[in-house]
Image (cartoon, rainbow, N blue to C red; front, side, top):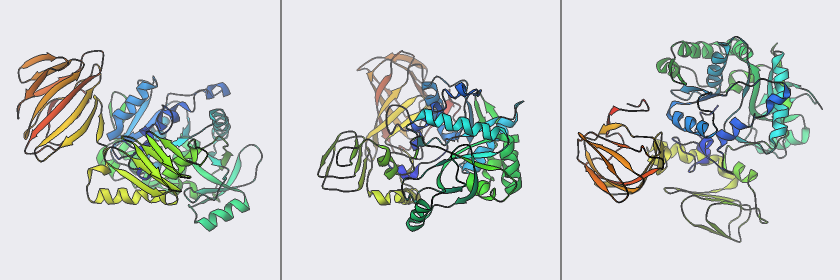
Length: 471
């Protein structure tokens, strides 16, 4: 499940490039790590199918590119939600897709925004849960709490030393005093959000507790369209699907019913990176408890996390603080209040500020662009086009463009002329001229683009041809 917005990890996470596609530690992104986490489980006698990814349609090229980096682009199934409707509809899409096969597959449902430090222990717990689910039960992986965490939901389960415990109750995210009581009492586990169940078991439980969600998703699924490996539910029908989580829709209703809900304990260094405090929890720290990423200088700071993305960040005399710097925004927050970052994101969205959705550097299926300067009637961008990629054949009604090649070789279509430009060469695209930029070389192409005109918005574009199916 890779459709989340990651609002509490702003400003590094944005609506257009959310946290699951970020590499917060190491070289792999959270999404890529989630995909690879099951590698090797076949050794437990389990046949593993290619992954099914449920994500947002706007992120389809991010998903495809990150799968390509893992060598998996053609084998994965990509189910694209036209709008976000929380995890219950997302799981239902995957279950409906799996139910169309000849076998009633067991689904291992993994959020794409978690970390695990012991992959072997993780695979062992999943293998145990698969055996439980194969017999018809719904199984959740539960985490033994080591602190009174208020950011997670809890599961109350019968004590067990081995096998799968019977779940007695799902509990909402508690306040601090209740979390302390859960820790002292025992029997309470963090809800990891990782579920293992047969597709038929989910559809049966959903039909019992939330038939409205099942009917609405089924309608959208029946009207789906397929474009290569992209599977798109009908947009109008999916928009009508009630937004609900797996927990609220089904899991909380299972205890006390005839649905067999079990829990397998997971002791694998799990963490849900839902907020910056959780990032600090799993990061490597110095002797003073500080963790840093990027160009950072610290003086008399303690238990602080500093992430510098674009420039030097210096911190003096701060305790228990989060500092996150990007090219266009800076966050400073007390660690204990990191869950409240989502309120800043909500305020940005309400005021329709661009920092809510996109970074200054914006990724596209053909590469990326970085808006490095702008004024009343001009904008300067640095643009990278991947080898073999091209932008759409397009025109602009309100702006002209100057292109200067910095590195690589550009094929430029400018009206009826097609020319090749190499390093230090330039061209001019008049307002209203049909044009295209392409890189058919073997190295990345980089150009500087200077736009000038009365309106410089990204929506001033008319596409005539597009390799990526955009309009």
